Image 1 (cartoon, rainbow, N blue to C red):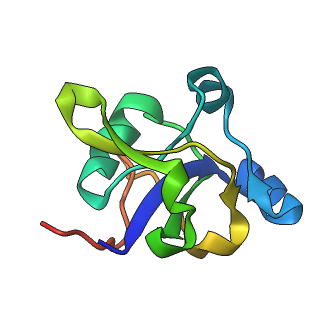
Image 2: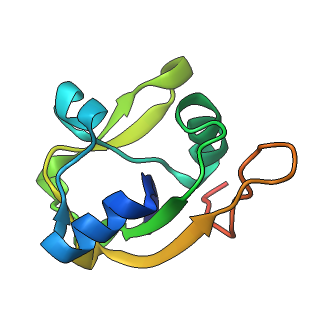
Length: 117
């Protein structure tokens, strides 16, 4: 896998891009790390944490651009290993940003993502 993902509001991404880094949401700061997802985890993350929210973007993050010592794969939802970043997410590590549109039934449409599956 060479890409992992982060879901953010468009406004939070614009602030992070301007600052050069994303330091985390309230939930991230409370948990002590930035929550990221692998491709196969995105749909579940959207359902669990972003259901019905508008104006979201999907960040495509280069795995090799993250500090290796700060990235840990740890158990989360249903025991699955999720990527957790124990450092700010550099805007330079983000190589693509796609809007997450809502379908007519209120479910987010995922753009094409890279998966190891």
